[in-house]
Image (tube, rainbow, N blue to C red; front, side, top):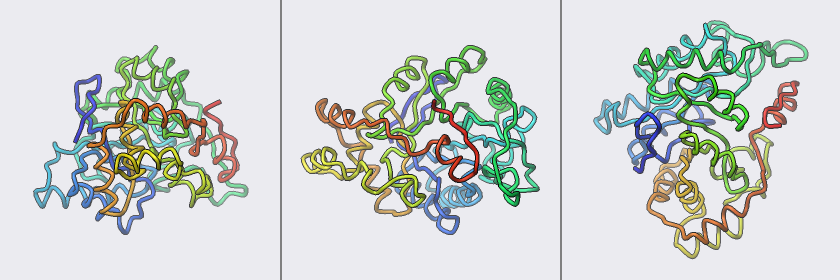
Length: 325
C-alpha cells in the first residue's frame, strides 16, 4: 500500500475504504474482506450509522491475525450536532467505543455546519433533523464558530484520542480562517473530488499549506444515483475519454480514475461491498498514467458537485444551507 506523508510525519495509506452507505448487515464482513484484500485505511463517521459494525470487522481481522491495530489507519468524523466545545470529546469517545479502539489516526470535522445538540440517549446518530417528528421537520442551527470547534479538537491530540485532526467539505476561505488561529493546523482536508469536479485550486492551496487532500466519491455519480442526487449518465466511469484510456492501458475505468487521483497526490476513498471490486480497485496503485492521459482526465472537469448541502438540505430537510457559495 502506497502512503501519503502528513505534516505530522505519520504515513496515511493512499487508497482507503469508505464506509458511507455500507448496510449494517454486510458492513462487518465488508470491512473484514477489505482488510483481507490489503486495505489498511478505513474511512468512517458517526453519521454513517455503522461504526459498531466497522469495529466488528476490525476486531475479527485482528483476532484472526490478519493485521494488528498499528497496521490500520482509522479515520472518523465529528458530526454537526457536536460542534460546541463541550460535546467534542464525548463525541470522539462514543466513536472510539463503537469502533472498539483506543484511539483514531485521524478525526475530521465532517461539515462546517453547526447544528443544535441532540443527546446520545435521545438519538444516535442524530442525523440532520433536530426533531424528525416536527411539522415541518427542519435542521436547527447552533451559533458555534468553526474556530471554537477546532480549539476543542486540538486537545484530542494531546490526550491521545487521535493522532491527527482535520476537516471536510471546506473551501479555501474556511481554511484560511482556520489556519490563522490554529495551534495545530489541519493535517487533512477531505472533499468531494472526481474527474467532473477536479478542484484544482483547492488542491493547490491545501497542499501548498501542507494539508493532505482526501477525495471522497472519487468515481463520481455512483453513490448518488440511488439517492436521486445524480443521473447514471453523469458517471465518469462511462466517459468516452476514460474508457478509451482504460482500453489502451488494459485496466478498468475505475482503476484509471483512481490512478489519476493517486498520481495527483490525493488520497481517494472508495466503497464497494464486492470482494472482487475491492481487489480490483487496489490494482490502481500499480497503474501509471502518462502526462497526456492525466491531462485528458483533468480536462473533463465540469465543476459538477453531487454532495452539496446547498441543494440536498433544502430538498430533504426543508432547510436552505449553502456552504460552497
